[in-house]
Image (cartoon, rainbow, N blue to C red):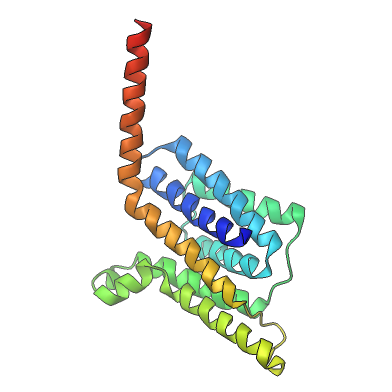
Length: 205
């Protein structure tokens, strides 16, 4: 069950990297989190064809949407690509990759769309990246069906295991939970460090 752990860690550190950069302007924390995220996603990509397809699709979709726009993102991307080049990349379905890439791209574009922002349900659909979730769910359901009806398998189309959808939900839940709690945890940690530094200075005086 290492996969669910690494999916969760990937979501956690991806969001820490984003918020450290965007909200707190903490370059060091953002870079450290980005490096860990690149390693965890890279590990998943070389050990699971499903993860490889999903995260490569997310990578291509975010690059196409011009969302790789800071040092954190570039570092994470380079580490991910470096790992799959050095350790090898599983065979994936080109059609499945294309569909997942389009879904990831739509999620990124929709999340920043002014038109979507003015429509509550559309805004929430893209805010929580439902296009990619729905696509992964469909491929997972089809994957389950092909275990019962092998004749449904089609060349060039990669079907996911049902557990892949569960793993991806763990990634998403981890990402969203960090987003909800990041500011509070960061501020408390900063205050605690301030107190510790104050005590340390007093002891040295």
